[in-house]
Length: 212
Image 1 (tube, rainbow, N blue to C red):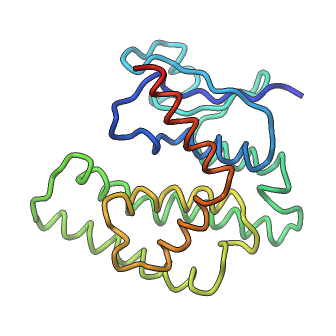
Image 2 (cartoon, rainbow, N blue to C red):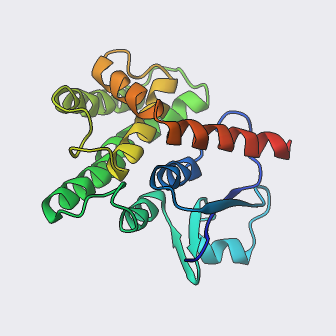
Image 3 (spheres, rainbow, N blue to C red):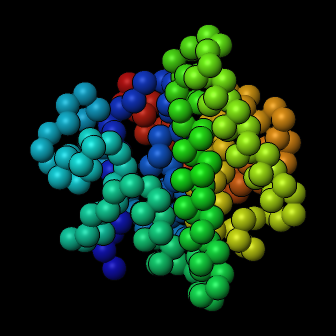
């Protein structure tokens, strides 16, 4: 078996530490017990080699022998194919996991990321555009609240869908965006209490601290 390599930036500023998306991959790898290592690429200078793996100059990407995959959702799906811990064998349940993985990235993160960028920038000005983003995110969270009130995990058992969704919601919660979504907060608490998350999160913080 090839050693799996997660590539991320060799350094990032303090603000995004603990939220860089390689965490999603390391969390999944820890859940599945798959061997891997983390490598860094320069944050300040992105060369042709970087763009050959990630065409937008971002991170992370996963290397598995001669296979290189970018985009955290695609990588989670790839890892789900490698472990029943991350995605069940039953075809109906697998489809449910895939649905919720895409929902986390396309329905929830699509609404939450623009909202979060304003908060990262410290922009608290009330504008019509900002109110539109607030309402858009609130609508998505309201629907998710009603769904999570009926289940522990999105697709029966814990899966890559929960890794993606919990990580998306963590960033919203960082800026108190879940004040009216207690069920979402409880869901995050369940997910981030898992030993695999605790280790992946601590490892990311340590990785960047060592680079200072």
